[in-house]
Length: 115
Image (cartoon, rainbow, N blue to C red; front, side, top):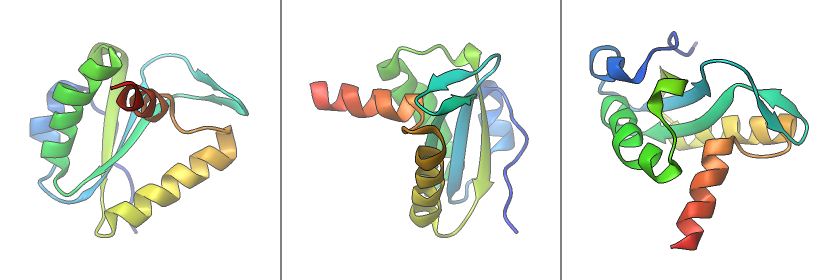
């Protein structure tokens, strides 16, 4: 059975993340984010064919677009083979539970549309 790793700081990506396909989740360190149907610490869900590179890309390319400091976030990963299907399942579950996508995913969609 697949399960997520422990939460780590972004500076540990090189050391802790494997070069394998999988999902990653990003959460705020302290407190909860408000969503239409409740609160959650989850900020972003992602998937990649290489977890180490994908998480590093999130740190170097996506966080600057979102204008969010990595120091307020933690990240964890889960190695899976069918990454896109698992990712869609996690996003769907989050959406049903909280009434929207994770805040970081929503922000990225809006910023991408503005370009």
